[in-house]
Length: 160
Figure 1: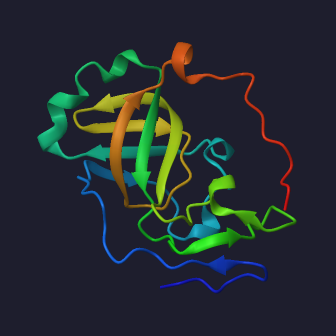
Figure 2 (figure 1 turned 30 degrees about the horizontal axis):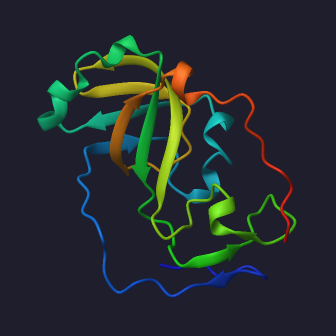
Figure 3 (figure 1 turned 180 degrees about the horizontal axis):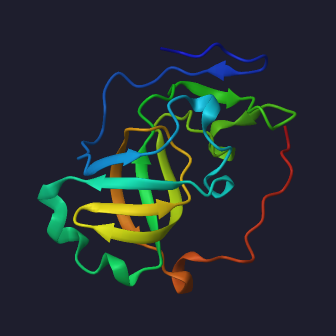
């Protein structure tokens, strides 16, 4: 199902085929069933969510508790994929898809840095998500402050 276009938004023609295959390694359980319920960004919520990793990947979780924070990559499976220009609710002017963090993009891959609260078997309790309940999980990586933190990073106002 496609959302209606907002004034100023422009769709693009997507390729006819895909370039890669992915394995969903689990599902993310959150309290949000509709996009309008989700926080604007992952840091906007203190909800404890559950990352359910498929049992076949149990061994891959070995040592995950050593990290206080994790990077989760997930597939925003209910997002439209065909916008080149978007008008997010919190922006005054249109922006190019690659200049916003919206789930609407050709490949709806999302990234969140989450705080790991605990692990029970193949389930992880985390804080810091902004996705719909049942969202497919692509990958889990430890957040490494020495590599991942960029305090000097900035975002200038849009030029459009």
